[in-house]
Amino acid sequence: MPALLQLALTMIAVVHPSSRSSIDPWTGQLFGEGGVEQTLNSETNSKTPVISGVHGNVIMGKLGNETAKAALGRATWKLLHTMTLRYPEHPTPDEREALSSYFHLSSRLYPCGECAAEFQQLLKKLPPQTASRRSASLWLCAVHNQVNARLKKPDFDCAHLSDEYDCGCGDEPVVEKSQPEKDDNLDPMDLEDDLSKDDLTGVDMIRGGR
Image (tube, rainbow, N blue to C red; front, top):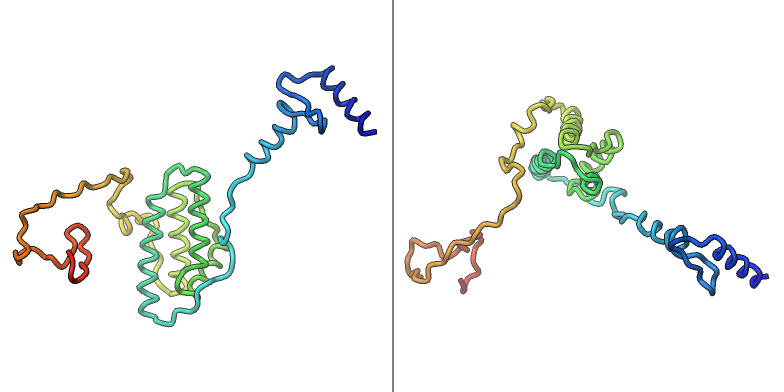
């Protein structure tokens, strides 16, 4: 019976040959145009990478220090608002997925556990809007005002987001700064030079070295 089936498939391929197809003599499968090869390629191309860990429970514990919690909150809102205000006007599907994943990952990894739990609830109520810079920034402002309402703080005027959180960096591409030339004639005993810090980064130098 298998031999008869293979013979029938061979005759079909001969009578109705495809311009770009061929038959595997061992399996009887057609490869090429409309055959197994195209099916395998389409299955491979349809697969997109999946980011794991995006959805799940809060990871961090409760943050008991109220001063640290308030400072963390201000810094985080500054980061998030600046990020959405610099988000592309016309993002690609990959960029939209990246922004949405960032917010969901933040709701798990935010150092204040109780704050993260609240953020997760807000994400369920108001899923991230990533279609454009305007939609993303206004969505985040709405989420921020939800938190303000719980804290009994006044609503923030979403029409003036850029006035509050504009970093002044614009949309220009990043350009590497050229390093200034070092003067080999510097006198290590010149007290006007601060030898305790790196002259480029301002980071404290390790004692005993330059």
